[in-house]
Length: 459
Ligand SMILES: [Zn+2]
Image (cartoon, rainbow, N blue to C red; front, side, top):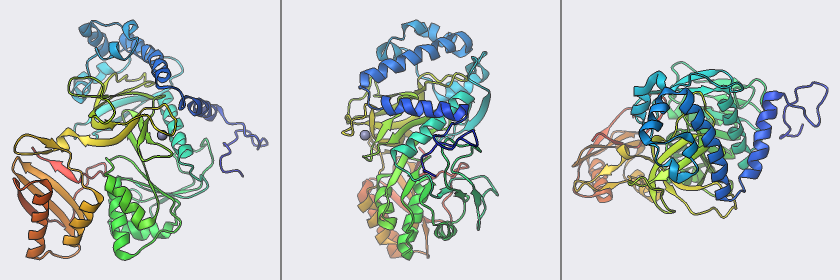
């Protein structure tokens, strides 16, 4: 069987495959994506606004929250002829979503959008929101999953190891759970090899033992967890000879993780930028380490403090409008992340470029002068830190405007000289205006969703 052959719905037709209705729709979307990725940026924007007007008209007529929103802004959906008019509509915040409750959900989902499902997500802000999504939107979501596989030329016959399940008692060590395919669908668009899953709360030692046993071709996990596994592999001289790619999701990818994974296993990291309430936002370019906005599914703005679009090289807040979720339209949703805008990509795709995706402003380091910085550590920075003490994992916490705490998980208790050296290193890196304490911890906690942040601000 050819690895990229779609699954057939009719037993005695094996080539070319005749897919069922759902899979045929996903393939039709992919067929269009293959073309639209090469469109000129202006043509993409025009098509997006054709769709935005449909979405906005639906929101205006059937979602109580937006009736008021449009009235306050002195707009009607027909006025939305492009990005400038669009920017007159106020941003939708997480607080708006919490306060609006049912008033953000459509009173009438049009035919063809299927049933609705509700999900709860806290993102990394700790502010939980409820989102309602339609079956149609989930199907479009699946098309972007397939695009990511196509872009990164994955061999679907391979084994996918997944370390992301965080539910208590689910996919427990030592075996985890084996599934026949990579996705949840019983009838996937393309046949795949098996996937194996283990709970991400399993200790890193046990995760690595498990991973060695799987001989997986691909690993899907959070960036911080990939980093922990890579560090331990280097420390123990463990190789994963069958591994071809590490796919990362859910957290901000620190640039140093790419180097670390390359050093440990000699494979690339392919990162993706998604949100449960907003879908696929950006995927890594097939030829570069930066990201392409998924313009066929989302209108994504990167705005400066004045609310104007950022130019290439500038960093601003990310505001997203998923184009196809009519169950709970989110128009100009301020997702809370920051990103840096890039120049047009040399690969020739017209999809906008994001060079870096940064965390949330609440995760910025604040200097006593009031200046704010992204506390990114480079690969040499991390190497220097690890050379000072036997550190397994670390986390920086800004307690107040003048003090930083470095929390470390260590493989043996630290000597006083090591603690001093670490504190000095932190002051060298972030400024000697800070009082630095070093705390040894048995375990650095993950969030309920299994996420980990290496810089936390308590300001
Ligand atoms: Zn590109």
